[in-house]
Image 1 (cartoon, rainbow, N blue to C red):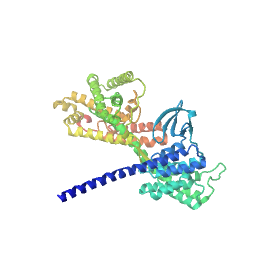
Image 2 (cartoon, rainbow, N blue to C red; image 1 turned 120 degrees about the vertical axis):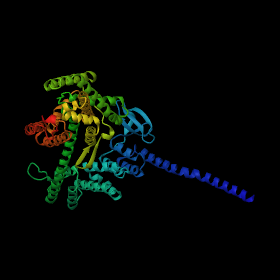
Image 3 (cartoon, rainbow, N blue to C red; image 1 turned 30 degrees about the vertical axis):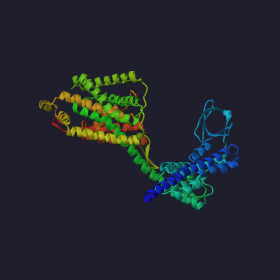
Length: 555
């Protein structure tokens, strides 16, 4: 009995102690936060009456306290957005509006709405304070936990170096743990030393040598003024050793820039080739199987682009998913239109290529006018999803846009799916049989009429998918398809009518050639040269690079 009573006494004592200590532990952290906020508020309240010499000390205190609002306050001071209300001296963020300013309390985030210009006053700064503010803001960004924010701050310093950043960069180098970011910081330090008047000759030459080893276009802009000549023939940089070091580093940088320029042109050429592939592969199928010169193929691309626009109107809150939905939707819309055109017009004109050309050209005009009637003649802008926006910065001299990168991958997936359809399905077998020998395929019981209709629908549907891709590169308008119809025919003829591998090779070749010729001779002359080349090539190989084989095509 005594033992049981002692046990309960012990439990009650422990509970009492825990009840007493819990509030102390729970309150200790909020008390520290309250104290930090009170100290921060006390510094802010001194700003309205402080002189410029006193403000220098105050902004140092604001930065040292590392309050959640410290960086925002420093940026607002630099941007002339930090004000105080004359009636009670409360520090606020202020943005200009027609009636005066829209103000928000710095500490509480309370929105005070709009207020007259005479009721608030700016926390003024001079040039000396601006330099200090830039340095302190750079320190916040360079010591951020977010590596992307640190990297962006470093790039900003390299683009616009200023001696005021020297201390912040040196401090960041000492604490940086990531080796890649630390290397960028060393580049930023070299850039700052290069523009500083206090840097000695040996340190400046060392900075020039370091900049010559980096892969960044900004380094070229920093070193170029050191080798420039004045009108009288003298150099801007009077020291010959510094000038020679700059010339050596610039030579290295220009060689590196030329190499990455080739890679960039190759990427843009492949991306253009991917667009041509998507636009031409459907035409290669219809032209190869039926021998139809479809001048309305460009309008199938246009319909796919407008389908993307409509899907985004239907799904305004899901732009990223809308592009995925638009792919099958564009295939169905353009494919259905292709089947309708084949069943109503094309099937009555087989064997008469000139009349087919004229009929499809008339259909293209009808479709363009139909779109103008429904959507108006004005171009429509399709929103690029967030996951396709921006660029992949490989280094300071090479940047690849995500939208073109995704289009390259997408075109390869479409081509791969089409090859599987042609090789692994019964419909693909029938299509190949009709392509190689139509009379024999018909005698074997294949309904060549329906194969023609479905093939025309397949080619048109793929053109619609091409429209989805093009909507991410350009505005959507009634004349969108006309810009690609001629190039599509060039790709088909050059690669070999009806040959998918030939279409792929021709699209990539023409896309890359076009991007390499454009900087040399201009866009128009580049297209003319490519056209002349294809004409001469067809004279030697009328069936293209990879002609399909079979008794029917050889006759």
